[in-house]
Amino acid sequence: MYRSHTNGELRIADAGEDVCLSGWVQKVRDKGFMVWVDLRDRYGVTQLIFDGERTDPSIVEQARSLGREFVIQIKGKVIEREAKNDQMPTGDIEILVTELSILNSAKTPPFTIEDETDGGDELRMKYRYLDIRRNPVRENLIFRSKVTMEVRKYLSDQGFIDVETPYLIKSTPEGARDFVVPSRMNEGQFYALPQSPQTFKQLLMVGGLDKYFQIVKCFRDEDLRADRQPEFTQIDCEMAFVEQEDILHTFEGLVKYLLLETKGVEIKEFPRMSYDEAIKTYGNDKPDIRFDMKFGELNDLAKNKGFGVFDAQELIVGIAVPGCAGYSRKQLDKIIDFVRKPQIGANGLIWVKCNEDGSYKSSVDKFFDQEQLATWAQRLSADKGDLLLVMAGPTDKVRSQLSSLRMEMAENLGLRKSDEFAPLWVLDFPLLEWDDESERYHAMHHPFTSPKPEDMHLLDTDPGKVRANAYDMVLNGNEIGGGSIRIFDKETQARMFDLLGFTKEEAIDQFGFLMNAFEYGAPPHGGLAFGLDRLVSILGGQETIRDFIAFPKNNSGRDVMIDAPSKIDEEQLKELQLKIDIRS
Ligand code: ASP
Image: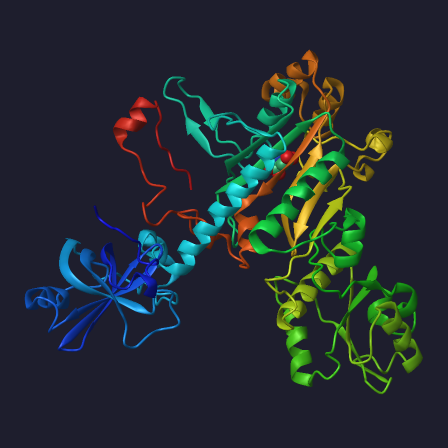
């Protein structure tokens, strides 16, 4: 037996008991006449005492030789500590050691195994197994496990069936590049790894399973912007004989349940907002509604009033930042610098201080009088003491710039509180988006999304105006899930492929199996998928998904621990009938 108890378990009530513990050496404190060792495992830390008077001197000597992260086993008696530590659950006791065996020695770890470590990101990833010994990482992984357990529980209770779908498939268009795998048995042919199980879950509906879910890996070969992983996990779901409302109801239920079970947070009903409203009011389709600062459009109040800079612009739009009217010149300059950063790309902005005495002070006092500025303040629902920030430009561009500024101001003002949760649904996404580069429409969600019946007539005349039965769930400014009601008849699906620029042959070659299935009695169906990594990290109160993934990849898509991707040998290439010809 390696242990009678864990290292997080023993309390003062256990004093006098003979125990056996195993774990890693966290710390050795050698005071000459006595040696203390902190013994750690997943459950906590227990202090061991090797005492010159009460412990065999050879064992005390052995304790002195222990290094950090040695794996040891001890036997001894639980005793009351003289100097208690109320910071740790086992802080009232220590173990007077009678036997010590070293199960394994350890090299000095390349970084400290402490809550705050001296290891940089790359080093932590290289030695991720040591990083996982640290409390914060371990707790994140345990939290993730709790969330997935609760997901399974909720969905199983609702009658969902967990079905596995294959990884070696062919392309599923979710808008990214595919990872491909050569097939040895089918010379010159490749599988694609699923960007999602989209077509399979739809086929499961044709198969009559009716309520499906899977916690599943998806693979997308995208340029890795911050905090994206080439392989990530979805809670993937699909239901048959449902309308959008049924789906919203079911999965709002899931997220409510998760918030309650994992965070103790009760939320009654999720607000809903159309895509158009989200864009107009927050400048993006995943608004953070933990705080206000809604956009107000000022064209009618600020254009053609003698300030030339505004007159030529498509949209003049602003926000009221609470309590910032007292900002100094320096603070205002910092905001202007922010919007001028290349990532934001604005030329500048206009500010208006709504002073406590009811007067206004602005950077455009020469052009606008007090009464005019008061109308701006009113439009932006500003209070005394607020600071108005106003930007102008082409509509889409200026909205996205102001959206970034809104988030930046919220961050600086501490309004993005990690223990506050503000979910919402964003509905009625456009079906298509125009891509200037390829000069054609792309599916905004994916090609299987159904147009809204009432917009069907626009498919020929004005496809860009067609709205979809598509929805996103947003939590604290992040899209945590999204899905749609699907097309379930062959004609509409063929029409959709046509709109997206597939020839008939291409559509049949890639998705013939799905269109065939639609000819054998496909039920109306729809679903969605949640990004598990992001959902867990937001619930866990953190921004980065990497800390909730046991073995993540770095920003170049590398696993620096196992050193992947890597070359394969000539022999393997030969078996696959492949030749590497790197083009630069
Ligand atoms: N397959 C979609 C995605 O990965 C989700 C869905 O439509 O259910 O975003």
